[in-house]
Amino acid sequence: MDAPTTTSADNGTSGGGGGWFTPRKPPPATPGGEQDAAEGSRLAGMRPMGRSASVAAPENAPETATEEPSARAATPPPDVEAGPAAPPSSPAGSLAAPPPPQAIPADPPPSEQRVPAQRSEPPESAASPDAVLVRRTMAEVGPVADKVTSYFYALLFVRHPDLRSLFPAAMDTQRDRLLKALLTAAEHIDNTPVLVEYLQNLGRGHRKYGTRPEHYPAVGECLIGALSRYAESIWDAETEAAWVRTYTTISQVMIDAAAADELRAPAWWYAEVVAHDLRTPDVAVVTVRPDQPYPFLAGQYASLETPWWPRIWRHYSFASAPRSDGLLSFHVKAVPAGWVSNALVHRARPGDIIRLGPPAGSMTVDHTTDSGLLCLGGGTGIAPIKALVEDVAEHGERRPVEVFYGARTDHDLYDIDTMLRLQQSHPWLSVRAIVDQKAHLQLPDAVREYGPWTEYDAYLSGPPGMIRSGVDALRDVGIPSERIRHDSVEELVAVGD
View (cartoon, rainbow, N blue to C red):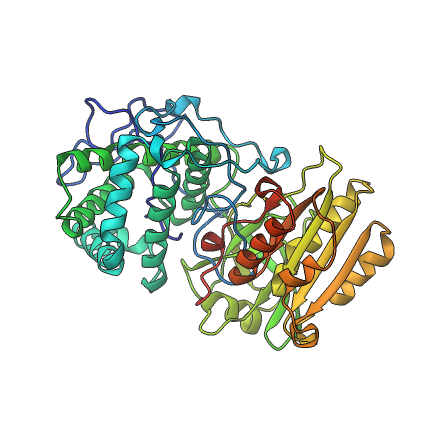
């Protein structure tokens, strides 16, 4: 998702008293932290009480818009920030009784993160009452989703014009992101681990927009207004109460995550372009030097903003494991009408300054096991695959790594020489180039020709279609879902930009 309005539901607060969108127990204030500002108009009591997630000077920005690269899918996220493997289901009814804010653990720094195991959703029959009502609402407004989102933003900007500056100038893609976030929330509303992780990523990521605790009530007020207008035939006091409880918890989780992140990381990093290697007419390898240490794990991604398109952020995967010189590289493909991608490929030059959001994503190697790695990379999706190979090499492991590098033509295998050099240096690595026009089959189909893969952990990165078909192919050959890792397609890739 993008911009500060990501609204994706969590496992709402238990009902009862309390004001609209007011957390049951505010987190302790940090020294010098700001208190929430004045309430919004209609919902004067729904003001989250968390610490301010005010923007630090130059720095960090995670999840938001996305552009083309490392499309991936697996966990929650969407906007949000995005993107890990899905965790185990929470007990039924968790929406009505979520863990108190202080019980939600702060995320560990990147060096301590591990790939979470995928987890199944609770059966529909066990859905909590609030989950039933939230999903019912989303089903009702689905056919007119574009009208709902347009009306939501119209309400927001008319009632709270001061918030307009937090959003990009063009709102088309932003409208889509709001709906996707809501759908993601509805899908995982009873799955506490998945939803909390998703919302924490969103909360951290929205720091880069300047999002603060006092902004959340305005979003909730206008969200309720838009939903009630377009779900009028089913909207009643009970439905509204379910959405209030849900959004109250959503906002508190995001506020808490932003406040915790503020204590250990900037809202964004400035980074100078130090190298720009145009590999093909529309693919460039862009290398930058952050203005301060930037911790991340191989397989993760970051959001980037260019000076030519302020407030437009797109996700790109790191093309290498962490380096001793602190440099970061990204593979960028210029896509039609892609503002950020075209700027990075055709305008960026050494000396230009961009901004980086914080690292996100859980398509990382679990070094506590010795399972083989089966990696599928399509197009610029080869970037995080290369980073994973380097990560395995740096840990001195001898576990087998099988890489399938997919492309439509030989021309698209822009990084094949790098991958073949890695293969020559590491006997445990095998690299296979799969060119559609020559092999007359797509990457997922080619994987079926080899194997068996039942003892491998699978990693996928590439266009959304490849991710989806790749997951199906891997399941068909016996790899269980919990061993297939990829970040959320919806979260990472807005194909049109």
